[in-house]
View 1 (cartoon, one colour):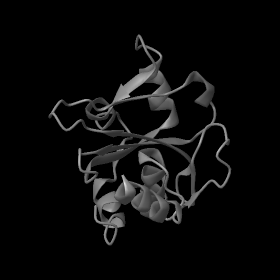
View 2 (spheres, one colour):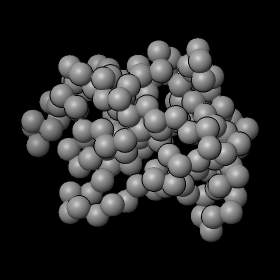
View 3 (cartoon, one colour):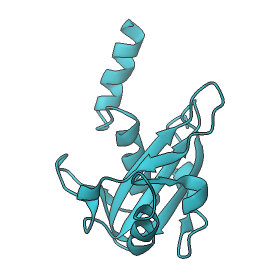
View 4 (cartoon, rainbow, N blue to C red):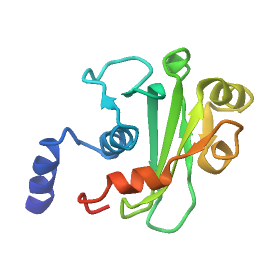
Length: 145
């Protein structure tokens, strides 16, 4: 537990408290953007010079091998972002896949779902989706990912 505490303390220096913070750091770097400083900003986590307001959602796959790649989009996020970034981590936090999905396409899909969820494999197939896996993996260089 002392090692875990030490690791968490060193990650906090970079503004990383959990998987979602790590995802935001990687997406911001991959898009040459900036993380939004306020943790209470409604609707987006990163500002990108090319893609505008980007909401970041991530999922870490379970160690038992199940494929759970869905992320939930809260209704409160509507009108709060220009692109949704979905980042899927393997169980060891290496990057399995990452994509940017345009706002309209996200809501067109989410509105017809029982829950406000969107799966990565579904999202990457949407017209206008951009596979940014390579850029996000490059952002992990030097971070052990």
